[in-house]
Image (cartoon, rainbow, N blue to C red):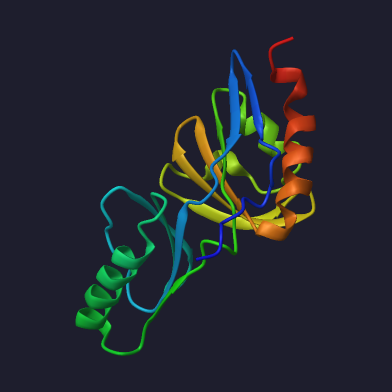
Length: 167
């Protein structure tokens, strides 16, 4: 089996301050689901990306079991007209938390993120990079860029967060 490599390589993204924590979470299990209504998945975030389109974010190395469970559940509801695909290598995950997280995101995103409810997700551009942004809690966000843009977005987020980091 080939060794997995984080999109950031050996570089790690980690910024912290009194009102902001920013880090990457490599090797999350990400499953793209098309067809049917969103399924409830234990220990996972389920983000609606569009009508009948969902992104499931779960613990690392849970893809095979999670894929099988989602396929079984969706096929029982909608029949064969569904798709469940492991896209873990397609995207990476950045987490921003703290009272300054929304401000840092707003520096490079024209979407009104304040109006996104907890559990909600939007797609758009952040620092000229196509991303999905999910609101986990009032002051916690997950950003899902494509893996090929991870280094660019990590550098941009680090620069945007510098004034919120410890001196």
